[in-house]
Length: 113
Image (cartoon, rainbow, N blue to C red):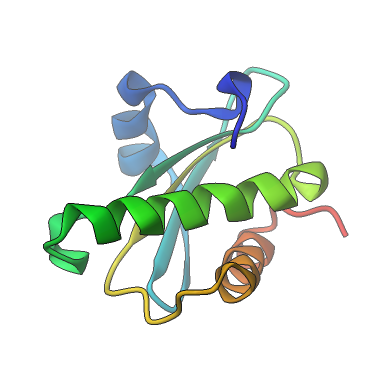
């Protein structure tokens, strides 16, 4: 689970969505922008269009959150990011979601290699 310091507050999400840069990988859309703090913060949006069932959307959100948690040591500090689902998540295993999140973070240039 992400620590409180790594969670993007809800009032900051519209700022990232309107003024941020984009990176897309499959069904994932990453919107990101620089922040003034020394820690990277993340929010996750899984809209009703991706699946009508709340349990499925919550599971998807948990998988995404855990994937970011696994990559947190390699993510550069000082970024606000929103990871949004554009479609249905076709995979159900943590390893596959980890690789998708890693590739979208690499595209955005947020990972230190």
